[in-house]
Each structure stands twice: as structure tokens, then as C-alpha cells.
Image (tube, rainbow, N blue to C red; front, side, top):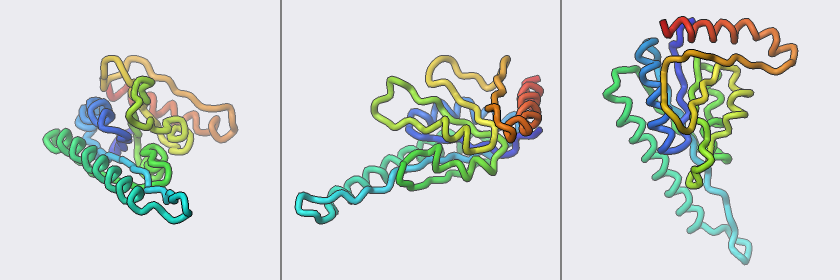
Length: 186
């Protein structure tokens, strides 16, 4: 099974390095198209004490989110432009501001999804909802650990599914993906 399209979910600046350290070598090996996905939260309409929308707060929040999205996009493009792989960047705005949830539609059209595991030490950023991504994407999801050494080759793979009838019927596809990942290493 070829991995022609890979979606890299980028929730924070820290995820750029972590995810791309795995995604770029993997994409080079498989001659894949790499899609970076990031989402920012829409500004929520807060009200003042007298009940009117606080437009200054909404504007400041929108500008902060825009700056953060541009910073993450710049870091992504800076890492990948010289890598020699086909790529694109997708930026979203959503109520949740969760790149994993906003990237589900992109993930459903990919052969493989890569996302960084949320770090328990990261208090400055919101972790991506990896669980929902795994359940909703319907595609293989490679969760990159929040710490430890990064590798783009694998010795052991875990293929998992729940006990539902639909998941059991898709077991062969998951096993096929696992065999393809193993075969890609050799």
C-alpha cells in the first residue's frame, strides 16, 4: 500500500519540529505529498457588563490567533521548503481551535495521518484531540510521542480496533496498513 498523501496535524509551534522530524523522512521515502493542517479558534463574542459585545477583546483575540497561525505556518514552510517533498499548507478557523478536529476532513482523504501526542508539561498550548482524530478520521493515525527519540522507521506496530462489527470488518485493511508500514522499512 503506497502512502501517497500524508496529513500532518500541527497544533502548536512545538509540534512543527516534532511532527516534521518524522513526516519529512517518511514522505521522502514514499514520495508522498505532505499536507500540514493547523486550526485556530474563532474569536468568541464576549460581552461587557452592560451586555454589549466587547469588540476590543474580540479584535485582540482575533489578531493573536492570526499571529500564532502565521508563526506556525512560517515554521512549517521553513522546515519543509528545502526538504524536496511535495507539500501544501491548510489553515482553518474553528470554534474549538483544535487542529485535529478541524483536520478530520483532510485526514479522511489521506493515506496516513501524523499527529503529536500532547505533552503533560505543555501549559502554554492546547493539545490536539488525538482520540477524536483516531475515531473520526477512518485512516491510520501515527501518534508521535511527546518526548523521547524520534524515529521514522518502526520495529513494532500496534494495530487496534474496538469490538464493533464495522471495526471488525475493517480489520483486514488495518492489518494491510501495518504490513505496508513494515514492508516500507525494508
